[in-house]
Amino acid sequence: MSYNDGTDQNAAANLARSSSVAVVFASDNYRHEEADSASLNLPDNQDALISAVAAANPRTIVVLNDNSAILMPWLNQVAGVFEGFHDGQVWGKAVAALLFGDANPSGHLPVTFPTSLSAVPANTQAQWPAQP
Image (cartoon, rainbow, N blue to C red):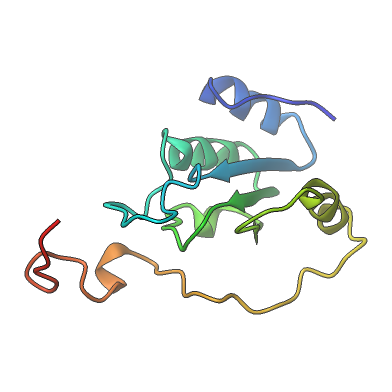
């Protein structure tokens, strides 16, 4: 098992290329909690990191740690996505159990993940003219 912190996309992609499976952990850093968000994208260029790793290794799994639905422009490039939402103190053990097949990743999501922002009702100022 090898680790890369993702700050260098090329290094992360090179490591993924030489690995049997790549796992990318991504987070919105809880930026949506108790506030409206101007974007459904992951911050800090994480979408580009996921795309680079997935291009290098088609057996890429993304583990999300976020508070709400996000856009996943890379969804068709990855082998799977685990959604963590609000994680707790044993989240790491739960994710490991899922990744190693010790637990069944079944369930229903409490939200709908849009394929693009245009699929979201009231996504423009004309559709939802509330003042910020």
